[in-house]
Amino acid sequence: MPIIVNLDVMMAKRKISLGELAERMQITPSNLSILKTGKAKAIRFSTLNAICRQLDCQPGDILEYRPPMPGEEEDDAD
Image 1: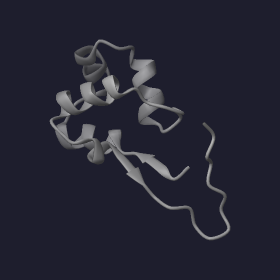
Image 2: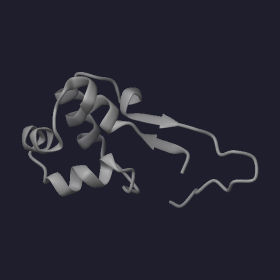
Image 3: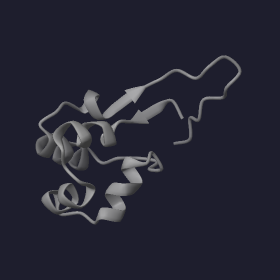
């Protein structure tokens, strides 16, 4: 998938655990883990806002677009 989630990178930079961030955001650690591992198909703006507020970062620090390599298909599922 061409959208890369760098949540683990920002968490490491801020020295915060998944459990602590989930608690601060008031969501379950399993839901945050799905996002962190890149298995999520979507993210709500309210969730992205909460992550950025807690990690003191910008959305672009969390989400990154990497174009597919030649020959790879881009997943455009809506």
